[in-house]
Image (tube, rainbow, N blue to C red; front, side):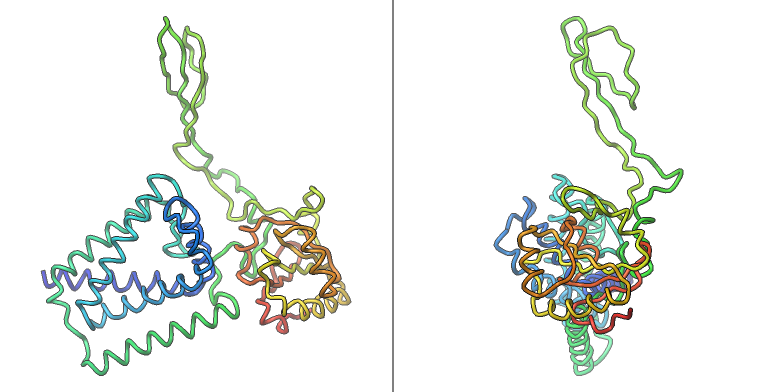
Length: 364
């Protein structure tokens, strides 16, 4: 039992630290995932949506700290109980989400590792088993250091997490795992490579034969049967390849200009997924920088999911010398975690991407 506890201690501690740090690198992204849980039937707690960012930061810091405390063996009773309660809650959450197909990605490892709902549930079940080993064998969890050193290690880990969270919130994630990272080409991200797996469907054909229903299951071909066709039910049994960039459009007056704009030699995108929630103080600097960009030969566009009326008011109020195009809000949130933010592209390849606090770092 002693050795089993040691193995479980290392696996659980390391996994919680890695999972927590990945999400702490992008707390804004995790808050979007929490909003999805709060707004759907999984939790159905829409009143928590305005607090999603604060909750996301708290949860991921707790996740990292519990992993650290487990590894150093400090406060084992508190640590193991906390881990058990947390994993029981998330196991229920992932099962409910998977069974009722409410949220397609749990966000357990942010954008670094994508897990299907059932994979997330399986991961949580394995962790639950390991944590139960720790729970029943907690007497074998002994501290690595003396009490004073353990307090120092725990305190340093907590302060480091807070400082790191503050840094990425006021700038951008230190590591970008999304398909819109610097150096990525958006058009290439939308293409499906030759020979990529295609989705596989199962078809349940229903016929009337001799006055009774008869169902014939095929992989697509119309069945050869002597009867009256009633209907067919289609089920996807295996997903095909999905390009990392999808649902990407740049629309104006109902027309998509994405192909044209992504072919521009010099393009600056001002991204503000929701102009009503933007940091308005930043638009004065945006106006100056985009004017400089236009003087340097860049084409400048705005991208938002807000209404044209609101976009025009912002444009007039802050003297913005560019037009706003419509792009899906989820896509814009995926592109960059700042509202507003600026991107510099060359023929669809992202050269620079900055938070509104770092606009002065742009080079033209």
